[in-house]
Length: 225
Image 1 (cartoon, rainbow, N blue to C red):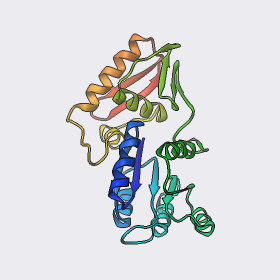
Image 2: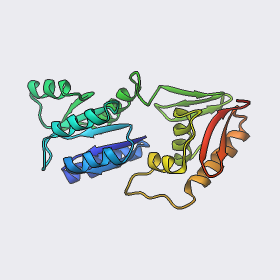
Image 3: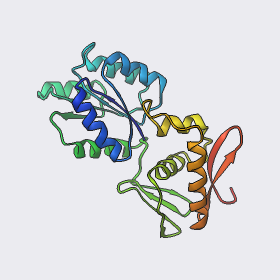
Image 4: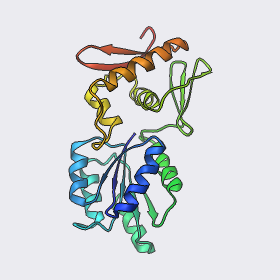
């Protein structure tokens, strides 16, 4: 899942981003409100982490713009503003959660997963496609009741396919979902990951298949669909 992290404290942004990436999130980091608004217009995000004390504009202005144009994207405010009135104002302005600095990254991760599990969110506790079960909390996968040993990139790709089951995913859409703008993929990275994942699924007897649509992209379908 791809996150946008809006934070002007460079050290905090770097440390938090590293922890989020270790927990299998793809993270784009920006440091100004203007860059945040531009990023949301340019890329698809599953969730946004937003500081309020930005150097060029108040974070609530950014929040308003995001919710006006992309109301379905959950936004978690992370700020040093800890007064009750500030929390109420942030929540009433459209944020989906409000976390006061300093915070533990493990709590932030839990809150991200919580907002993504809400109705209409991107994340369920268990994703299922045929006899494939993907447990999103610990990122374990079972195929036909057998544990599947997948690399991080294969897990990322399978989760993407399962959340978008039955929908064609172009190579560009997959790259946008799995790679941040500071982490460009190699030319054949998607093809290689899809090939390896497809083989492991077949070896374990998966009833859902990754189909390659040449010149178009990929789609996950149940066998016989």
